[in-house]
Amino acid sequence: MNINIRPYQAEDRLALRKLCCDVADRGAPIESFFPDRDVAGDMLTKYYTDYEPQSTFVAESDGRLVGYINGCMDNRRYGLVMFWLLIPSLLIKAFKNGLFFKTEIQQLLQGALKNWRRIFIWRKSSFHSHQGHLHIGISGDFRGQQLGRNLINALVGHALGCGIVELAASVHDANKAASVFFETQGFVIRERYPMILIRDGKEEHYHSLLYVKTISAH
Image (cartoon, rainbow, N blue to C red; front, side):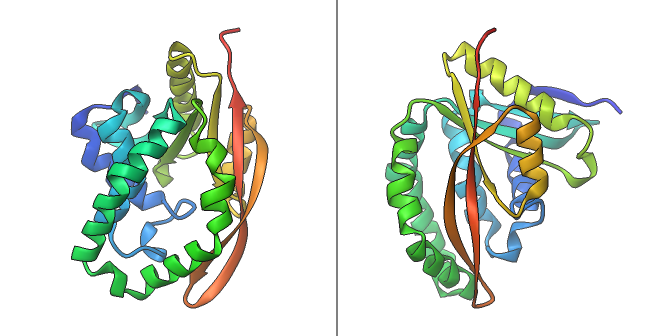
């Protein structure tokens, strides 16, 4: 099977957004907790595809996008763009789409209020860091074929060229496969953040694991 790892191109945008939403819930579709793919696609991918496309790489097989890695080489810039540009436009779109009247969104907002420490305190140092982070997604029928390793290697090479020495990734602690993957790629857990997600009116308590990889040219 021929799989090509290459830099992201503008024409990949729709396929990348679709794949991201297909695997957003620990490898399952995002609809299990978020009802609007358009808003979710903006929230999860728009910074990377529209503001820092040079730091994204994709895996392609027979013309199909089967994996991607979204990278950011400056966490502080990411935080500023998200706060001042993307979040306001997301709120407007969500309001126009009637999302705030949907039960799933009301539950997400309840969970966000309970996670205020994670959002406003624990993540503050990350948003003030000039290091990098990443998000990775692989189609279910292409896992276990070294795509993740090859995508990580592509991003690491790019990060070295940008002078970045650390890349971080957040993982839901119930996603054991993701934890094993990052650990085999040289990432180590730096922080554990207690989190709450509300589904069907019930609280799910878990930890968000911050994995960090230190990289160098040697």
